[in-house]
Length: 320
Image 1 (cartoon, rainbow, N blue to C red):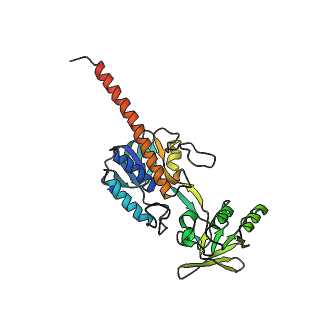
Image 2: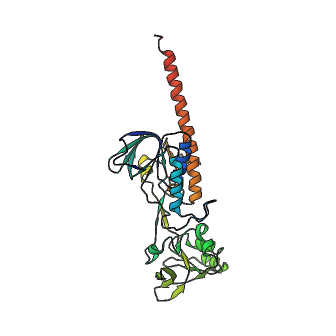
Image 3: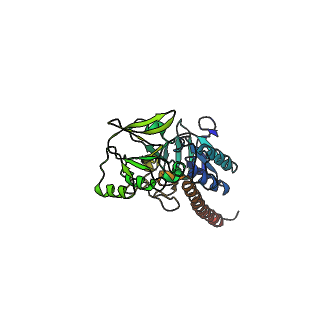
């Protein structure tokens, strides 16, 4: 790991600078490193899934701690000469110059932004403390581990009803807590048809005993026993670097990219949750690999064009 303050020569030139060292960024760096490109990965060390004890749904890596995946991934990528720089990126100048916190800079022919997203949780006592433990989000990541247990779903997001309907696949005991959300008659009918009970009332807090969730307490004092609670957080992309570069966004506010991660700004690619809120770890890794593949071919086209230009220039020079 390079110390950006002491070890990184100012203005170091790379073929590709990857910003974000999660599954997406590391996969892009792996493919590019194996392609013998000069690559740097800049990472601030704040992965989205840090609160989770285990990572599920990743073929061959089932139940691996997220930190272990990153540890193994960095070691593999480093074997191909990729530099790792522990730093925050302040901004990217067109061209591209990557300005790091502390003043150092990196020059790059291409950029991959894999900075992920952040989850904004509802302001309910106990929610942040239990996040990643027994307060969960993704049914595909954690539903099987709480199968057949009493499950609760907090109505703090427009998609919360669908969340509850989906979780009915993992348990026959699902309770939906509307909290301050108004439920339409159509949604009430759908929930009833799936045998999802609706617990009316405002949620006061999550009840915890001996560091384990015991239930959800409503404002009037009634406690509904639950072993796990799911919440649909507001997902906010960490895309300020992309916005500053002028990357286009869709109506939902996410950066637009083609299937390889190529954005509207030439030379800038994205991978993972920064542009795709639905990407699981394994999906993000695949997106990073696809971006690396496309980037290498994009660089190759430029390399060939430059080589042809030099050859023509040499041929046009008078013989000495």
